[in-house]
Image (cartoon, rainbow, N blue to C red):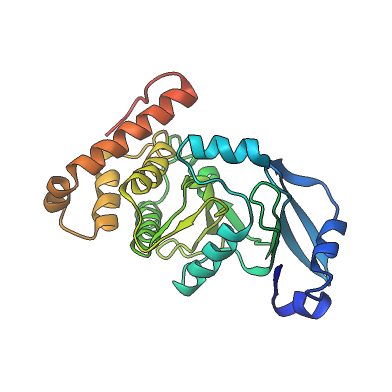
Length: 268
């Protein structure tokens, strides 16, 4: 068994009773899926979110492996990813507690507790109005740059998100238009390696592209993101990364057709 308690929770709980405390936490679930419940709770005058994993069962484990996907059987992925992002000085949720017990991947119990993040808005919600009400030019460019910078930094450091949609970038609402502060969240499926395999680079980049297809971006916006992400001259990256970019476009198009039943109106 492994339990880590930080700061205020280290004063309120003990490592010996942490799992009992977690099991006693109750409240309306924010999400309940695949042996995992997520809920908001308050303790000591502060608000937190709990992700409590109770085991996904061998059926889900085998299903993931047969699909060539690593199954998410505990909170360990997200705990490690959150801490790695903080080491890289990227904004994310503040992890304050983690526990894991049991060796059987199908029935392993674990938990992750993070402080509630307030005063933010997801980019998915923010950009919904862009087709009818274009944002300030400065903000538009700054957000493209910020998303590209975060994506480049996690990939350069061996992290792939696996669900890198705009809804998982949260904008601090008190940000200056020229310097938007973005938090990257929902890392429970993230993977950490020395180097991100091409397959997962494609998935992350395609997820961003897919979730940006209906927000009135133009070709210049797409090229701006690519130039910032690859950090090299445009002509060089278009030649060097031709195969990768083609794979990203194919995957983004498949996602769009799968979800909406037709091809996007604009597709660069």
